[in-house]
Length: 391
Picture 1: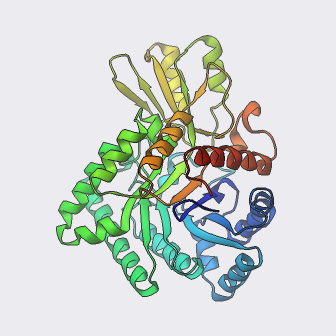
Picture 2: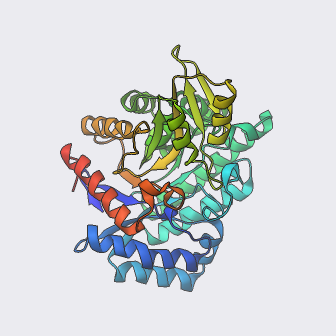
């Protein structure tokens, strides 16, 4: 939906199953329209579309694309952003670190992302700013050689040039947001700056183009897991000329009580679909990173881990706090909104992105997903409205 300052808010449809275009459209029919009917029944409704590679190829067929444009018009909906992080399957099968493949060392990732921008230009309302989000280059463990870093740079430069050509030919402001994530190739605000500095040093003649068309997709869950302050992180990026392409509103788990009861509760969040990175902090601010929650729990059980706090990359509902002694990082979302109140031009694209409904423990998410999404809208809009950022 349209909110203050010519901005847009949606939930990201990556929360629904759908690798093919028919599956994706079915989810829009079954769930998205049901949510729209409750949160925005009499006004134009914004969609944050997730398109995997197969669905994107199928949608690019001219007759299929025409039908979707008619669907959008009929249902008074519009697409302003596309999630292009997961390339393939994202639900119902083991994803874990494979969500990063193919990464930006691959031409497959480049071609897929270019296609997403081609499609976005054909469905984006005239004159509207459009964004696509993507992974932070790669997964840290995957990058072992300098030529891989060079390949990432070259492919991102090529993508930026493609976005620039589309922007000029369609008279739209289009941009790609790279999404820092725990154990991603870059994961903190400082590592994000370092990555962009390296990219700009690699192609100094393209500096203006790169800063215009590439930016950061700021996920409040991810930066909270890194123990960062929202105001400090966003100011660091903005003050260094990095575009905030999109903001994902999402919460992580945090815990500072490691009793047997706590560890048992955390075990309920171990599951086989997604990667749930853990960053442990000791009193001296030393950070230790674990690739998944089960690894961190094993380290705790063996005595290897004695940290005083954990932040866990497990997206939990914006409106539903976990039971103590587990806590939410929703304070990072509120800090982000406070920054936006003071700096309203920072970003215009917002998505709620709790994609873990199928794997949440019973006390957090085992109810109808439409009802949950409506509650997320209620919570989010209330917080936006408190700061004069709502509709």
